Image (tube, rainbow, N blue to C red):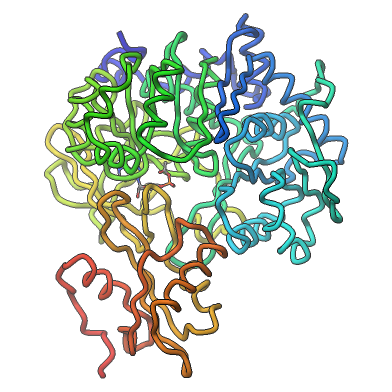
Length: 567
Ligand code: 6R9
């Protein structure tokens, strides 16, 4: 029997106070995610229960009980506080998925500071724009990522501390750098947790938009109320589950459901910090007897490609419930997983901005493969007519996915971008920027994004950011970046460029430019293909028409090109 009971039953009389009561929270109380995810679980008698099993690239294994993570949070919190770091300071996590990443997350929240998690795969430019925007005071990182930080530190006057969790004592440190070794630090038993309340800022998650630099999505401690209940009901975690969320905490899935959701419930989770291969993943599930698995369509498509035979080499009978997020989950993937694992992947839809799952295939609900399911109880979702912004009845017509604001994990703003935040609301609806249809039974079917943002394997990449970075290459005169179809990643980045006089199109130059972007931004943002053009399609007012290039890549009708510039 699932935690949730039937969807219809949960819709009746739904109120977020269900989660508040289970968390023992009353309006006006102090609320701290760091405390809820560790101290409270210990107080509930689960101090010796395993909180985290970690396995790294090199086969290193580590494990931590809830008491261990409580102490680690205190110890890291004390270290940060002794540096003079305090509430509302932004502290960036820039690490691979090593235990210190998860434990520092708790420590930062316990002192009331704001966690700014960034992918360690980011290059120096991607890192720089996000640290500069947030005026980040400290960054916690690993030795291997130090060169990227050193490259930009002089341009970041607000960045006072570069904390290295795996410093090699023989190596010299530069200014602002200091080592912190959790294993040799003396554990701090008693710690005064910052008295945060519901609206105290907790996380600043960066997400890419179509224009301008990435936006910092601001969340508060009260988000735990949504994250706890959606984890319990949708991911259906139960006390003896072993849970695996495959997402990196640089992505919101890796924090909302890779830390807060499971730990607020006192659930044991596993982290695998190793590259993807079907073999490695199946072995991991078998070894730790994973029972609940939350992953993403790109990974599932890669597993499908690896075939069914390899599945038979492993004992995967521990799997009880599977869910997916980040991109459209094709119906084939749902049918395939049912066939090979005996369980379908349950699609879930949400965003960095929503903080928690909004639409899902609720456990026990009839799954329509290819559909995202229905809104979580307590969430009013609709598709809006794009001109009037009024709800379209459930008649299969395409509209904009929108939600009535007010759920606990909703973002509280875009960092220093008040105007952009306001633009997300029309007629009392929050606009997601995605399009969908709703069928007669109320199921949502994803159609596509309403902007030019590229979703490559679940990572949102801003064409603007890539175009700006391309222009910094000496050979590039102009650039336009669009999505190109891809069998596994669904979309990959493709760049069209014109060259400056004196440069010639050449495969070597193409490779050089690709690498230039990979180093500056990330491998996700690196164009998989570069096409040289004599001239980019532009409107008469001089705007590059990405739409024309996009249609070309996808073999679609170009549509209205009346504003296209004449030759
Ligand atoms: C959690 C997360 C949000 C965007 C979202 C949409 C796409 C997410 C999806 C999905 C189709 C799903 N997206 N879930 N598209 N089906 N089940 O992914 O946050 O990185 O902010 O991305 O991802 O386009 O608007 P984020």
